[in-house]
Length: 464
Ligand SMILES: Cc1cc2nc3c(=O)[nH]c(=O)nc-3n(C[C@H](O)[C@H](O)[C@H](O)COP(=O)(O)OP(=O)(O)OC[C@H]3O[C@@H](n4cnc5c(N)ncnc54)[C@H](O)[C@@H]3O)c2cc1C
Image (cartoon, rainbow, N blue to C red):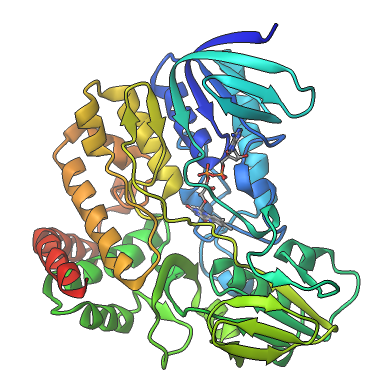
């Protein structure tokens, strides 16, 4: 007979979002939780990501609310020099393992079922023993809905002929001999990481080709820094952006003005990007990427044959001495927005653009604090992941509307100001009394917040 477990919550998925949500329940309620996941340890997709991946944003904003990640070191070397450290994927996995083993399990309120498939209706099946467990929980939390995919999880979506060397970026860290050429397929953040890995390891830029179906607007990591740096860099950038949102007459004008201020970057100043997916780089990384001249802008790859790459809009030559690196998985899938709270089911989603762990912790706090489902859903209006340039405006508007709603609730403001994962609401401490410049930024933000919402609505309607 199947083992039967009782709990207040069944959390499906021990990725970053499931962990960040559970962490808040552990700290703000007495609830008991069963967490089920297919992986052997918490951390979700980080278990399968390419070994040289790092967080794209500072460690200071990542993980669970109650435990610091990293040591707030400012990198003194490399292409992130001068900015706060970025955890490696092994560091992220070790961190979540510690959260599970040193924080969750010792409470006696968490039961963790690793290597276990969730089959629905409370049924869980071990991938190792085949044993099934029935979980009777008052509420089920879907922490898998964002459907993060990294290249090693699936074959490429295009045809690869027999004998062609094509592999996910994981293969780069296992090379035992070099190739004459490298073709990086995909120009999202993973493609950028693969290009940077090659250049960092001494591959000549002439020997790298980069398939770039769409150019992307990029975020400058210098603008997304915690602590004192944060107070000046993101504050300045954010205040400037809100002023543009409040006054621009078209989305094109807004993008140009924000780009001139350094709020958005692009790979090639002569190409107008059509993609925006929160990809974050430093200026030094961008300078490196710009060394790659052979950029293939012919749409998506359809097939890689022995000597030819077939794309939507043409072909380019390749050879048996070339490694093709598949960087086309969708790590930021645009999914339909669902109600976060639906009776005895919760579906974790972003409530602030590209801040998934913050969002999961925030939803945990709302679940722990509020009773009325309509109010809970109003506070947790999902912000679907961006994909196109217009989504830059749509997600900014959605963020602003959420922030305005949160601003009406004093308790929520206090929680946000003390939340480690919230880089946006934290106030300067007494030791970091705001400078005159920071006070001016705050004033600009306050004055432009409402006009920005109204004008963003107008700009989006005109562009659609
Ligand atoms: C390369 C990369 C770098 C990133 N860098 C940053 C960053 O610097 N900062 C930032 O804020 N965000 C970053 N992100 C965003 C990132 O996606 C999220 O921060 C977060 O890790 C996503 O976690 P998740 O829990 O939503 O998904 P996942 O990590 O995918 O976790 C979901 C889990 O659910 C499990 N699961 C699914 N279905 C079942 C089932 N039926 N039964 C059992 N288990 C199941 C899966 O095995 C998985 O472990 C990055 C993303 C990628 C891809």
